[in-house]
Length: 278
Length: 288
Image 1 (cartoon, each protein chain N blue to C red):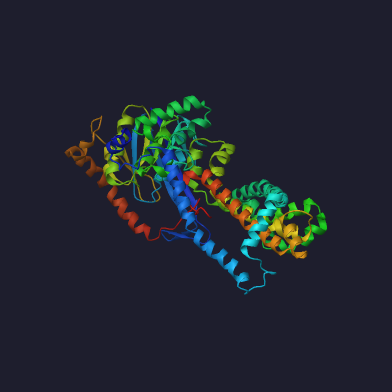
Image 2 (cartoon, rainbow over the protein chains, first blue to last red):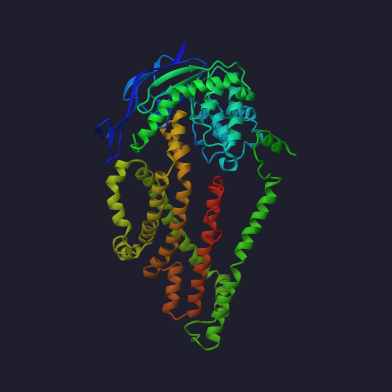
């Protein structure tokens, strides 16, 4: 069963005043980020989006999250048209986006507050999640008192607190150092394998994609659409040492094969890349 | 090893310094602040010594500048008699009424101007024009329109204190990182909660700085206003002493002004730390 269906999605952004872009000789003040983007995501699946910078992966997450609307085309979540943020989704950002004026515990409570969960219950849920991420002793800490890895753990816990059916993760580990990144990948996969949450995960790291994903969707250079979907046939539960196996390397090779041409194309495009705003 | 360290090291992270007791830390902090503060004392003493010496050695006529010791003695007498306190309280009352009014008006207005671009476009020109007029230049007009009573003084303090509060609230709202708004929206917050739980706390640090400046301006304006048209208050007291050639009293009043300013500033710095502790870095020194 498909929990998310995106059909013929197009997304254009208007450029800031005075900026123009040259699309194959046509000068325009609009930039097309997604063009004919079709994707179906199964319930409980871990789907990773990879693609060159500017290919609209994050934009697609915003569309699923209801934070932005497609220019044309439709996105369905649980057979319902996505028009506004849904309480079935949770969102994790690259910049953590923890509220600096709230403690770790209180950050995790945030989403539950909007849903009218009572204080006692909120604290209980938040404490459970903190302990799941090994952060029980840090509940009173403010974000500035936590390392980047800890902050991102809290941010993931915050997104999980509302028990979302779909977890949207926008390069969540990109700002972390290599070791912390691997540790968090291991933690995420351990926690996810015990749930039936659907995850859409955006990354630039092929290793990360192969380690985490059931399927890796390769997005083309801008304007983005799905070029190829690669099924990762690694067994679960996955442990860290799988990264050095031959099967891992083979899968990695497959993904890179699909991605290479697009990255090269994007390199050419970057020379023209303007700054865009909605 | 404490459990905390174990957890942190298991997670491959460097353990942060541990709070054995927050009280010890707080005490240390206070001591550090006091130590920092005390470093300013010698220069103040030098200043007082020069003050004492100049009239004593005949460089300045004591009639125009009484010695520091005379001034202090006069100040002491004024405090003991309760005369000074009366005027101080009146001034503080006026200043806080005007300042309070400024908070009630400028902060909400600032939120509106900072959040709604359209509203800002309509109002900005007027605000910018008004804010660049010196408050003191308007003092006579306020007195003419509102009379010599309390309302004219409170109104002019309100006017003077409002601009910093307004500007800082606007910039506080405008400089909120959009990622916080996005994160909150992804968690389905209502508009009211978005304001209450994100926009408001995120702009508090900037508003507090505006409030500190606004409070300083309030104190300055109240003195000026009392010098022009009042029968009580510290401004009146200083002016009155001046007119009646009670020179030591005048200096005692001026010294009180300095002390008052220092006190109010401490209070606001303390408030700033109290409300923005989550920022970690203490942006201002204890003397502000």
